[in-house]
Length: 427
Image 1 (cartoon, rainbow, N blue to C red):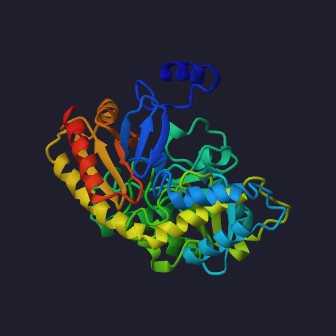
Image 2 (image 1 turned 30 degrees about the vertical axis):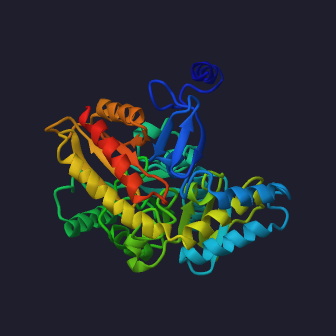
């Protein structure tokens, strides 16, 4: 049945629509931190639909909220008052830390970042954008144009002038040998030099932890130091929290808070986990920025009632059960367990991450050269052992990406680590 589905997939869907595994997997249902395939095989899920199943598969509170709302009305568009949308916007605005915040809902992180770019360039009357090397911000025309990861950027055509800044990758590049303080100083000096060669940009967009790029991040405080330089010139700071938001990093509710010395960003984008699988994205910004558009705009599907009901139920569950704290505790145990494993595997260059957002970078032993074939081997072996993980990486890197639902238990973390131990040793 799966082979038949694969043939049908290839016959009607684009060649560039990537599938994991030599024998692609059809997931039919899930519960908690587990999913099952069409053959009835059970897997511990350490990737959550690309960091999207944030709390748990088939979370009863979300299932109930969706069912009840669907029984009333699914959708009406933003042309009508929408109680669930207002209620979720109120919660998100309060949690954002942005003063006088306004929230606009979209259907994806790509659309959220696209909207943030529209707001920033309109507010600043500039089409120049600063972005980080190794970054990923989506697959639309504008977000591809600012993505600093060649593997996810299929065209050089763009409506924006994008300038790339150092700092998103701590352990590679020209400043990798420096300590954290000197690393930040060098990146700030590079930013100042860059700004001296261009017209004033609209904004800097940055992921606090780079997701597709392999869960890399700068030292704490880098973006705060950038903010000081940008603020002097009126340049906005957009924090792309599509993967880092809602407490996944454990230490903070938002990834930007590791760089919060100068206060919150001007704009925050979010998506993925808030819907726990339902298609919710959004933008948070100060009112003066959000209200800068001078033409009509609506959203047909952004903020639709059934997705907002899911988001409210999911957010309530997250906060009531302190899943941020769980991500910090269980994620810390998992990282240390994986570092112990990595010490015995020559292919592992680094285990890094925060909370339940963990990257294992693989290289050819004794070198800094990427080992994509090793990453593929581990992906397959982990699946054979009953564990689903992701992979990624930027320029000349190969990284395993681990991001389970934030309700992961200690026993499940140990189980997953044991499977990864065997998979890594199989390279």
